[in-house]
Length: 222
Image 1: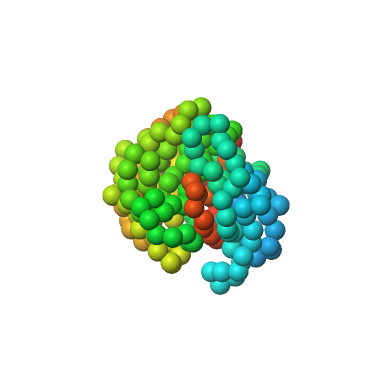
Image 2 (image 1 turned 90 degrees about the horizontal axis):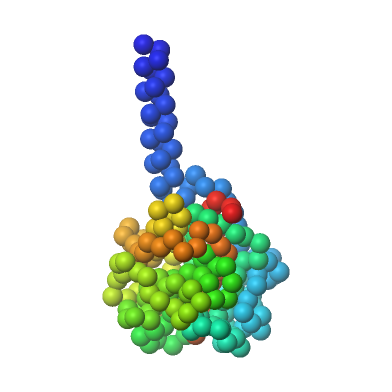
C-alpha cells in the first residue's frame, strides 16, 4: 500500500511540475530584467550606439531607439539591433513592454532578436501592421537574406500610439517559437525550428523607431 501511495504521489508531483513549466516560464530561473531607471546602457551592445538612449516615458525611464542605426549587415536583415551583453539562454520566456514611435504604414515594425550567434546567424520576430513575405513574421537569418519560418501568423499586428505587452516563448527541446501580443490568449505567430539551440537576446526594429521597458527573461542558461 505504501508503495502505491508513493507512486501516486510521484505522478502527482510530475504532473504539477509539467503544468508549471508550461505556464509562461514561471518555473525557469530569472536570467535578466531591466526597467532602465538607473539610466545606464552599460549592459547592452547595439549595432550603432548613437541610435539608442534612455528617455522619459511609460511612467519612468525607457530604452529608446530614436534614430536609424548606421549599420550595414552582411546579409539582408534588420539594421537596428541592441543585444543584452552577458545573457545566453536556451529555452526561455521573454516579456516586455513595447511602443512604436514612427509614422503609421504597412511595415511599421518593432523586432525581438534571439538565438543570436553572430551578425549573420540568428532569429528575429518582426511585429508589423501587415503580413507579407517580409513583414509580421518569425525570421531566420542563416548566412543569407532573412527567410520567414512562421508556421502560423495573423494578417497583421496593429501598432498605435499606446504601449503593448509582448511575450516570446522559446522551447529548444521541441523547436517551438510562440509570440503573444497584449491579452490575446492565442499566439499572433508561431514557428518550429532547430537551427540555433541557444543564443543572445535583444530588441530593436528593422528600420523604424521605438521604445522598450520592463524587460524580463526567464530561461535556461547555455
